[in-house]
Length: 308
Image 1 (cartoon, one colour):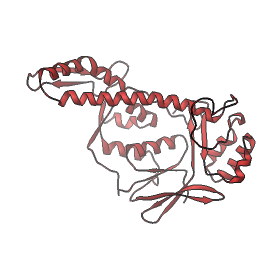
Image 2 (image 1 turned 180 degrees about the vertical axis):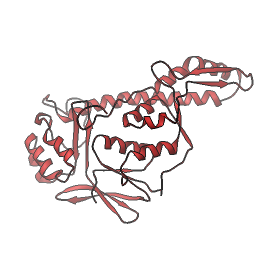
Image 3 (image 1 turned 30 degrees about the vertical axis):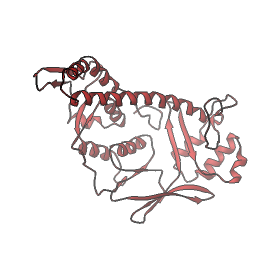
């Protein structure tokens, strides 16, 4: 069988990814080795960034009925009995919510077609084979089933633009295509992706030819090597993704540091120095740590180009 996208693991991330792909018109299959949705971990604390992501997936209405935001927290020194308050919510945002992990998984699963999640499907290997002169990815399951997939994607940039790509191992004949946009577009539609969904082919067909390019994947230094002639091409998206990665890297780093400090001051000793640091942390630093997780991922655009 051939599938548009294959996701390994029906955890929170796997199901959320499948729902997101469904929202933008891409069918995905989720392989889960367990016989049912996993329930490891009774509950999970979701901060505002996670809640905004779930809102973009269209599932928060169901969860709002079950779980209210936590407005504030209290930290008590067992020895002195002194208590400090940390405010999580504000006028601009709600506080975190504690939700049942199994309920969250079920809510996400309910958004998917019944045959999306394939339970008791343990992945044993991923390999490449040649088909119609090109390589495709082949996933083999423990029961002998085989799933074939090509590596392609449609990524929304904004309400009017999308970035599409196709990754394949070319043949010597393909190198004759060069950088002619019409030849690249024709090769994608008539050969490389001829068996792809119409939604993908429609986007390829409607692409601005000035943005279509064909390139080998290799190590490159930063600079203008991606675009020597200064024209706008899909490769330029790498620059935008670089900015995204740069922003995410530092945001994630600060979240990790803040999480470590939060646990450290709560558990590392009870001497006067640690008490001082603990009080200082809760009074001045804890609020800043909390602010790090208040990140809005935005909304998912639908296939008509408007936000869901």
